[in-house]
Image (cartoon, rainbow, N blue to C red; front, side, top):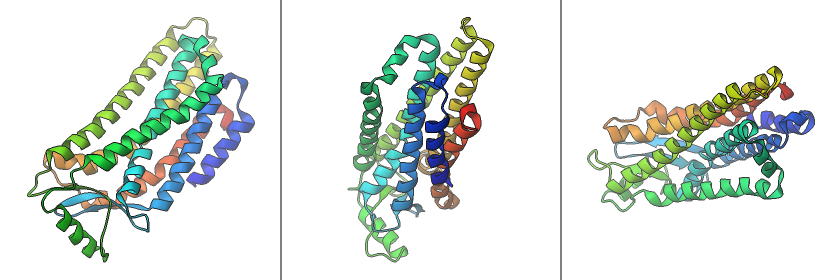
Amino acid sequence: PGMFLNVMLLYLIRRFSSRDLGAYKYLLATFATYDIFLIIMHAVIDLRAVITQQLFGVVSYNFLDTSVCTSLYGACFMVPFSLLNIHFLYRYWAIRASTYLCMHSNLCLVSFVPMYREYFEFGRFCICEYGLDTTELGHAEARRNLAAGLNRSSIEGWFVFQREGRISARTIATLLAYDVVMVIMLATSICLAARTFVQIRREKSLSFADRNSQMRILLTLCIQTVVPFVFVYSPFLCFFNLPLLGFRAPSVAAEITPYIHSIFPMLDALVIIIFMRDYR
């Protein structure tokens, strides 16, 4: 369903986008295209969460059983937050400083968006791949025990190791760095959304129809922000951050987290189709 909805959204954007949307339709198309990429990545890597007495993390259940693949998966699924901030910035400029919108029609900006996305992915990938401490005493043995429990000779992945209920300072710093980036992204979205809302209310040159249209697009963006927060970041928050507070992540979290992630690209396209009048 997610693949079908996003392909259909790309068709709707190309066929039915009104002139009022301007270059904003290209940002919507970028989002839909990236969602298709996430769907393919989720199917190929087949990520699963695991919880043992000493390890909790994620592994790939196929031939891509490497830490590189799991780190890439984690980095890519956080990119929608950065793309949403570009959307919010565009909506703010559309009301506050429309002269800046010419930038979004230039080839330079069209090239900048994927470049920005790739730099963001690379930064998150480095945090995932190189941040965790894998040299702790007992880490290798815990991985061998996990592999034996899964009937494998060896296993790779993205694991947080607890020794006697304690997590190393390096691993804690990595998890907190992940959280800080997400909080900054979310705070930026909230700030831009609030400023755009205030500007729409204050702008006297907008007609009643234009004001309603801008409010509807802003509402769509806000819902788009809630969707990845609920279906991507919240499971991560529960699964990886509860042990930092002295709690053990429930085993049900390991079972449902991959399925929750898989729903996100479908809901993202559904929100745009339902709330954007051009695509109903």
